[in-house]
Image 1 (cartoon, one colour):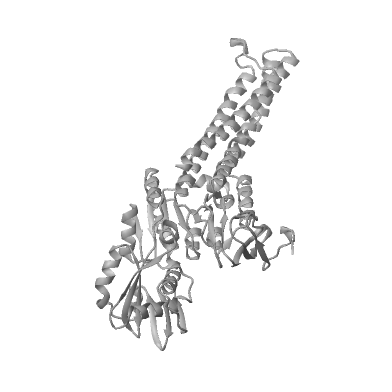
Image 2 (spheres, rainbow, N blue to C red):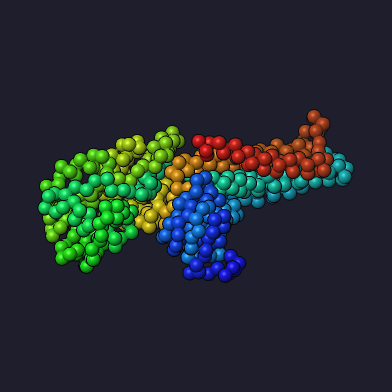
Length: 504
C-alpha cells in the first residue's frame, strides 16, 4: 500500500526499493542493501545495511530491496533534529551578543543625547539658524544608530553555525560556538571515539584444562546476553568458528567489569583481570599471556570456569585513521589531550603512546568518568569531553563543552553541545577552529561598530565644521550608517574563508 510519508507511524513496515528515498528513521527487518547517507553524515561512500542496522530518513537506498520498521517519524527523525538544532543555534544569543545588546542600549541614549547637545550647541552657543542646528542634530542621531553593533555577533553566529552544519558539525547554541574557542583540555573516550568501535577477536588462549573451543563457547554464550561492543566481538568469533551457544542461567552484568552466568552447569565468569582478583581467583597461570597481549594494546576478557582462570580472549579495536592526526593538531592549538577508558592500564598506555596523548586515565568505571572531568576542571581548565556511549553522558554533562560522536547513542547526542555527524575525531579540530574564527569575527565586528560610532558622531555633530569644513547631511549620514552594517555583515560572511582549514 502506498501512503504519504507524513502518515507513517512508529512500527510501520516500509518497503525500500533501489533508488527510493528513506522516508523515516527505521531498522532493517529484512534484506540487505547499501544506502547513501551523504545528506546526513557527509559520508561519500554508500553504507552497507543488513538486518538490525539503522536507516536514516532522507538517505537514498542504492542497490538492494529491504524492509524497514519505522522507529522515529516526523519531528523525532535525525534529519528533523538536525534542522531544529541549526535553527536553534542561529536564533540563540552568544555571551558576546548580550554585551553588544547592552552597549547598543547605551549607544541609543548616547545618540539621542549627542543630537540634543549638537542642536543646543549650534543654536544657542554658536548662533546658527534653527535649520542648520536641526540638520546637525538629525545627522548625529542617524549616524549613531547602533544597527552595526546589533548585527556584529548574530551575523557571525549565523554564518558560523551554518558553516559547521555544512561540514556535519552540529552546534546546539551560540554560547557553545563561542565557548569552544576557550577549550584548553579535551577528554576523549577511547572505544568508539579514538577507535572504530568495532572490536574483533584476535587471540584465544586456553590454559589446557579447558579447550580453546570451549573457552569461546562459554564466553559467547554469556556475552550473547549483552550488547557491549566486546560482547558483540566474542559472539561474532563464535559464529565465525561455527560454535553454537549454550543456554545460560543465573546471568548477571557487572557494570564496568564483566559478566557471569551458568553454562552447562559450570559457573562462568568473564571480564577484566580485576574482576577475577576481586572474586579471589588466581590469574598467575595466565600471567605471561596477559602481559603479552597487553603489550600489543589489546583488550582482554579473562574467562574463569568454576573459579579457575581457564583462558583469555584478546580483542583489538582498530584506531581510527584520523585519531593520531587529531591529537597532533590539538596539541598545535595548545590543548592538553586526555584519554579516558575502562580498559586495563597497560592497554590504555599502549594506545595513548601510539597516538601521542598527554594523559591517560585507565580502569575508570562508567559512573566515575564525570569525576575525572571534574578533576581537570578543578585544575582550572576549560574542559571538553568527547564520547559516544550511554556511560559517557554524565561526563558530557559535567564538561564545559560536551561533544558527541554522531554514530553514538541518542542519550549521548542529547546531552552534548556539539555533535559530530561523521563520527570523525578530526572534526573536533574543525569545530574548535571554527569557534576561534567565529569569535575573532565577533570581536572584529564589535570593534568596528564601536569605533565607527565614536568617530562618526563628532563629525556628524559638526565638531570639525569650523576648522576643517567637515559636515554631513542627514541623507549622507543614513548611507554611512547603512555602510557600517554592510561592512559588519560582509566581514561575517568572510568566515567562509575558514572552510579550507576545516577540510585539512
